[in-house]
Length: 418
Image (cartoon, rainbow, N blue to C red; front, side, top):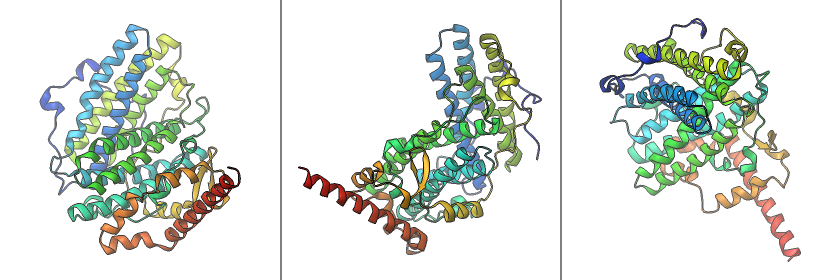
């Protein structure tokens, strides 16, 4: 596969990047014939653009220099025009169908990043959240069956397996357990930084989508499930976001973000099967290289730093590729199903102290039953039995017993010390 060499790529001058309305709003794909991974690329690139725009707004609100503000406004306007890649999703694709696409992004994107992540701690964090997004795909597949009588495979097309993993009921943890260590900006590989920006963008978009679309349903269970999983996505955005080094300057972060956009667009173009959409990815990659070059000039002017000393690589590899990851996901399930975060590390459920704050937190959150559990009972028997796999049942039983014992112990202490 072609390598991504940002310092050798062609670019389009930013003055030539503004589009007319017909160019901005492009015809959507056909949901009945589109390749599943074309859909995931569209979803991912909308998330990448959204993250870039939000970061740019945050930076310009904390910047005094008018020239930096002006340059940020220029790049942000083009990014805003590019973000209408979201319009490639067709209007006849229902919210839950798009949602299944979002979770397929989460599973196969996270798998790809984890498999190619050089930092062991970042990789472990990716693997940990992978099992949760994998379970979300299963819960939403049950909802699709219940609400619309839909077959999840019409969306994932057999490329991504659909079954239960670490149950969503176990994802609701105390905010303290979203804390994570950050990479070192001076020693971290550029691939780690690109993976970081990519996964934060993807998870942030997912949270926002669920929180703005879940209320469109009249069905109470659907509304509750979207709310429940959106809350888990908030956990994911936090834990992933904290992996980034806060010591990176604003201009450094902006340069990395623009580089990430170019890198992911370039990656998408290499495997895109739709010629029309492939051309979009190729053009937008060239635009983002121009934005990266613009950030490099700002970095040199205002911080006296050469962009090559910041990136520290002529090639970023491997590319981010959407492909089946069934063997990888099953391996992670077998090895890490019962892992839980504790004090910024990962421990087996049986190793957790009774003082683990999430025991009490989950007791509170789950006391009135749980939508992600209830939706399985509404699905077909074939889907429902996937939540009864031996390892899943064993984990749920162990978690329930542990939580009940901890809460009983706490009640006894309260009664003995009124």
